[in-house]
Image (cartoon, rainbow, N blue to C red; front, side, top):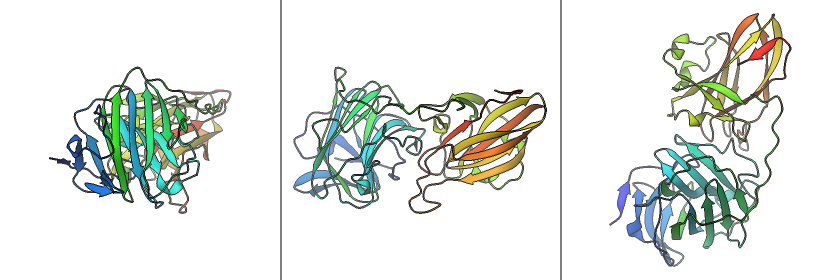
Length: 368
């Protein structure tokens, strides 16, 4: 009997469960899976019993997976959609690899991203190190295989050699669950196998890391508790009561050059904003240029007053706008003598929660 679980797949934004199952010929073994209450069912498709997902998820039962091989066949159309597999899932943390059916042949036809606190981070991890141009076959089965060893992963998509090698998996490293998900069109999974094996090796080669700017800020002080976005957005002054009881922690950037704020906190639709702080101490009054990037929205407060606001949310500017993070904005800070408080109130909507910043060294200015 199939056990039904509650949950809905939201594009590239949900999470994962676990694995170690016997080999299955072609059909899905329904007894091995727990299906979401909506958007998930066992059907016959292209001659195979399979799991159909459309804004649904399916968890592989009674399994813990850390290293080894995950393979499956998938069928889909060319319509817009996202489908893939989460692994090493624990609570709201997981590693995630998925296909973008509508982006066949493009550089972002697929995606690796870690998921922290239920937040996907593709807007932070959008380089060739995390996705590969792949041409898909539609309306027929084709194979996908992940070979995972420690912090490395080879991805095979209907190929004898890896189409993508990730040499820096950033999510959970311990054994966890496996989940498949698909949304925005009907995806079909069959021939699913997950074999835990610590002896596997990867053979692919990653694209080299991009060099980060010399003036990039490498760590931030981040408040521990998210607040209502409406409590800061559109406000001319920072309500200091929002800082009461906050525990500040140091968050370092990762290879993207950004600090992934989802490492600190999850969010809801409305409670979606974290405070990020830097302190600049000046020997005399002077004005300095401060570059920054954010995902998805930000209100910049300087010494308690709002001096800038930005909205970089997915498709808000036009239908092609991705909202990927970069050092695209600048603000000129009128420093007073002594300590100056710079706070970014960063709100997340979809696709990644991050902050990055840079500032050239200025004589007489120190930054915490």
